[in-house]
View 1 (cartoon, helix red, strand yellow):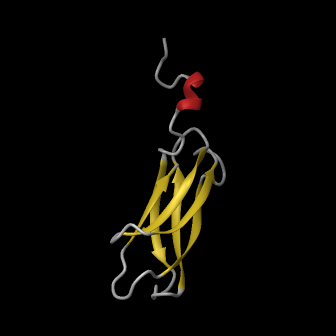
View 2 (cartoon, helix red, strand yellow; view 1 turned 135 degrees about the vertical axis):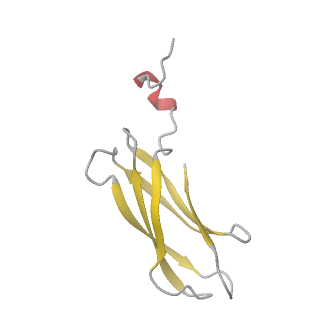
Length: 104
């Protein structure tokens, strides 16, 4: 049988589920048609390396503004916590709401 946590099953595991988004902030104003930077602090809490992506999208309309590949070493290694800069361009005028998510 297969035991939970069995190393033979590592190839089939979701290797990005132990990634935690700690904080998100825009470094300046986000205006329509202008480039802006959103800083995302993420950390790997798992025992394995994490491969995946960070996705910045608008809340209204779900327009993907940035998708960046991310690799983080295991949680007990140097570099398991990082600040990632995502470049986005304001999609509309007025108040803009962004969602930051992890993906595979």
